[in-house]
Length: 376
Image (tube, one colour):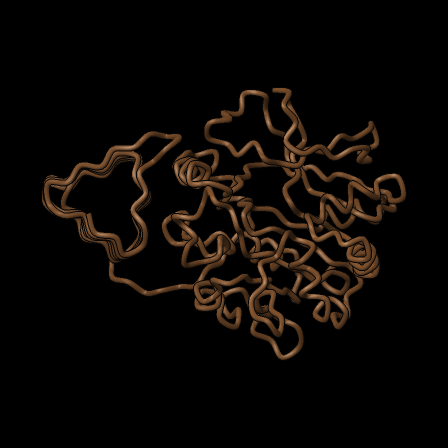
């Protein structure tokens, strides 16, 4: 596989439902799990599959992702041949042009695609969190003689539409696993095979599909282009086993963060035998005060905990003051929560300040969000 596949990660997102968390960053660089970024999972998945040529398609707010991944040292991608490539935002002589969909983003990476020596391209959207390798997917692709293979997972009919984003692509397949139809946001509440926005395709076919779509002035999603060609191509689904989460809204980000506190999800993401790599930042051990209390929580290094933390994710360098109670919340790096405050179902972005005696209470579907650098 390492000689045959290169990777492309589409790092950006224009989701209005995420705007409070990605106004200054790509969705790929959104912090998650106490010390990681969303892109860490996809980069690690590719590296664990021995994919050593990876391009990251960024959008307008790309400084955060560039600061995080750098030259790719933490993923062993700082190489003389191949390695990690940051592909700049979609640009023209008139300035920045907002891509209409994944097809526009891939078209912007056309030169990168052409020069890569590997014949197959693995395209992943960075808003999906999971731990897996792509070796078996590639083996299935060759065994079935597929033109395109799409990774999917099974979504139960009990999915909470108030939390989960119902805007999704659902694969309909026959008994052999061949895709016969792709539906967008079906309304029937039944178990379905949901695309994980991970596509394996030969790069020559990819170039042909892009050029053909552009000749008809189509700039939309790559999945739409595949759907239009289902009768001409052999498209197969590949089932992902284990946990996965799509970060497409504040509610889904919050749910994924809370899911990581569950032992089964924690095992699926971090104890499969496939490491999740990230940029390391050395911090002193977290200090716990005399009256501190922590239960079922992730606490990163460099924190000071003097209050109570329950079922929450606390990032590096956070200060939790005396008589503070934090429950079911996500607190990002260097946030300061001062004495006698209460946070319940809250997301604090980086460098936020909560003044003494404050009270913030949200809901599972609508957690309270304080943007980066906010003061309450």
